Every structure is written in C-alpha cells, then in structure tokens.
Image (cartoon, rainbow, N blue to C red; front, top):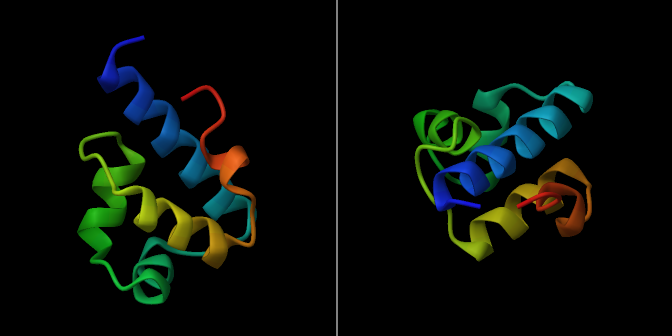
Length: 72
C-alpha cells in the first residue's frame, strides 16, 4: 500500500477514536501539545506524525496503539 494510503488510514483511525470519545480537535491538540491544524493534517493523512506523537494521541484517547495503527 502506498504511504499516502497508510497515512489516510492512520488519520481515519485517530479521528474515529477521537469522535468516539467525544473529544474535539482543539482539546486533543491541547492534551498532546500540538496545534489544532496539525491534528487536522494528521487526521486527513496529509502529514506523517512521529511514532511518539501517535503514542501521545493514543494515551490521551485512552486507546491502544494497535487500534490507531490498524490497517496501516
């Protein structure tokens, strides 16, 4: 699978989990110390976050890293 498709899948997984937890992009950004714009770019697969940032997101969302990287 192309990297672009993998990034989109990661973004979809993050966004789905964020919405499931009823957390706004703004709140996720605050809790992970990144900008709201970066959260948006991650969720749309336009940037490649570091593994540490994905771990931060998983921790904030209270989910397993495997859930966020499913089909990536």
